[in-house]
Length: 304
Image 1 (tube, one colour):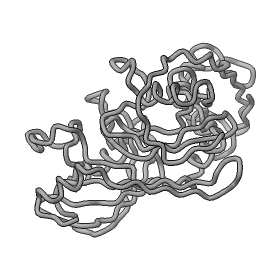
Image 2 (cartoon, rainbow, N blue to C red):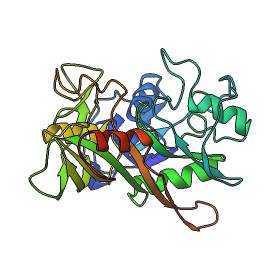
Image 3 (cartoon, rainbow, N blue to C red):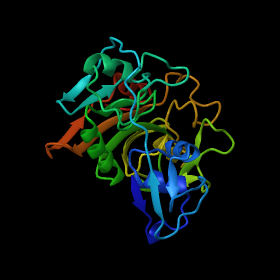
């Protein structure tokens, strides 16, 4: 594949330029391609730190997707919508989206392979077939899965163009000074703890979260979030930066708080909206908050 850099791309690192230009290529995947000499600039191999210049011709080759190898498992799925091109699932809290170190099975992908067989997009390889976007293990809610490569590319393009609606509900610690607002702070890997993300200017990407307080109760707030970008742990990091971390968050809540909330963060992917990549039909789905949310709100003096 060939890309031609524009004036606004000047100064970007090569790996960032590639991931920005290709919606299906993560930053880490771009680094791997560069290290394997699968990327050239003007016909010459360059390192990931190469700074792009206006007019640079960048050529790269992505490996062909390998056959699916992850084991199919008979795990119940809450399917909200399905056709021959895609499906929308309501993921339970506690389920990992795809296999990774320490989570070899029991994931959403294992369940999808049983349900869909080989009818899943292969763009993200054998570990993440069909996965267009992710939500954290302990975040519940709606997730879209692509069955074909064409559908996958169309959905990924909508995410890149910020036309893909993603609305979350979460319970945050404390009460907000303003009932609604925008958090526009860059997010990158935490330099002090590589397992966490952080608001940082170093090796980060822009991140924008819109929030609106829905209700307040004893020491907590129920908040609606709308994502413009979809960085790793974005809502969790942005709310922690405001001093209103997600209740039960094991990574970003201050120490010695929420000791009794050991079941993971109270964050739910409630709504999703997009244009069907094949039929062009506008689709919108809404998921009811899990019972644990209502139990928490009642326990802390709120009404539902």
